[in-house]
Image 1: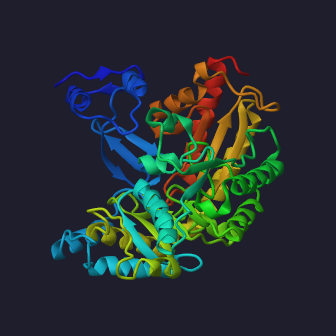
Image 2: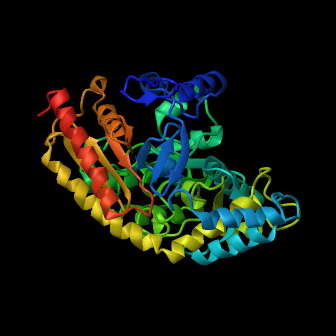
Image 3: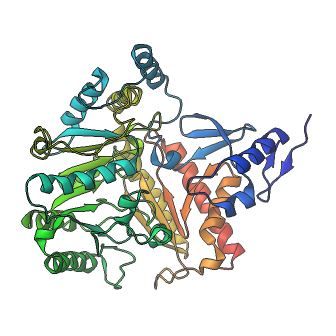
Length: 466
């Protein structure tokens, strides 16, 4: 029998797993890898999943509170999805949406989405990844005006502190400097505007005035740049996990949409993180009875069973590209993969059968209530979010909102505390972020909050923060 070895997090890995870890480090470059975490605990090799839990190669069980990067929203190991994918593979495993060809399953999915989508959104442009979706929407908005003869409308407005993807175009619309700085200069024509932040407004304003100022700033930027030069504005209705889901006041998004409409600026809603039921509505924008010109879905769209994303748009916009000689000059080899489409349809069946949107609203309200009980600890500064997308921001002083010393890495300490106890928790510095699968139960939520609470108590003792 091989002897297990402990990591710096007191996790014992068998020699078989250690051999795989060495091979991984030698032959694989991680996507957004954190080699500090790798040095501390070794490469985590996940072998299987069941429901809200995953298991590593040594059989350890972990509660995944972030649904495999906001994707596995129906839980792991759903035989009905597996069978749908296998049935499609028995027919044809792949043929692309290319030139003038489609597969029946993709047409069926497009019709299903048209029936579900808000407003006049009824036409799908299928791609493989969230970045592909935002990149495609940006290009479609620009070419839309080009084809209409309005070739001066090329600029894209985007908000600070939002994330829209990893390609150079999508990154140019990302307002987080950490992602941008190694690649600058990025694609030209992207213009940054202020975003509201109810808890950490960049101007130190309260929630309502922060949103009012963001609207005034956006309007001023539009006037400065010239409305006739702007094709679209891209935004996530609720900014994602990088900033901990700050929910804007109710007036902000409707007034922003009205401002864009006034100036003929198309709207792109990036719901790759926040769509597909996670907020307690099928689409996040439905909380404000809004529908954009382009709606980008990914991650949970195919629930992790296969890569697939989509841009939904209106017939009015799509018809511009349906004229001979005016086609959309963009596409990917694996757009509209039939096996992925079969998986997406099976996932939508699960949504209906198990009432997952309504479940997310109910379980999300319970999760929010349980997390708000953590305010009794002085380092809990803000509990925020919507539905099952929730965040806890840790601070040095609850009243003044003074940030913790980043060198202490308190958020990472709480994360590691939870990991030792069999729970995966994501942190962005001192913001703890949650996005459990929509199948989560009250018992699992109790376990999640109990572990976080234990980590907070341990952190207060460790760093003398009481």
